[in-house]
Length: 145
Image 1: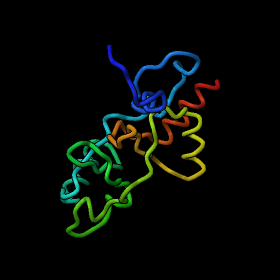
Image 2: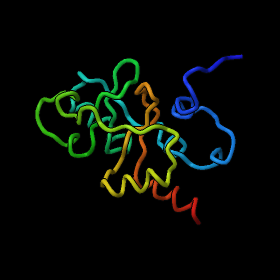
Image 3: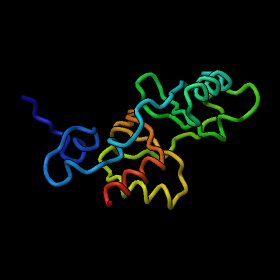
């Protein structure tokens, strides 16, 4: 037995199982892609770009050794020329979203802000996955179909 003291919101934010009416609804965590490429701050951008594109992605999440999100490299940043590191090219401190947020809410937010993708993290900032807008919109539409 474990006495979880952080509270219900933190429990849901960690992506742990829930019961009740919300249990079957898709969330940011259930739709986010967990196979998103990651890199470290000091990695050369050229190598990151090649690895990311070879994997069929156009984004990479920059994380530290504990998988805490430090930045985001989207297509624009990955395409930058020169001898850059991931740190010098990344979007630092990107907005992150918690895993329990309903997918319909995420799809609307991403469309309104014209965000192609967003990192989904635990409350401690640890990467869970990358939510791609087209995936969020598809899941939200399926939910209402």
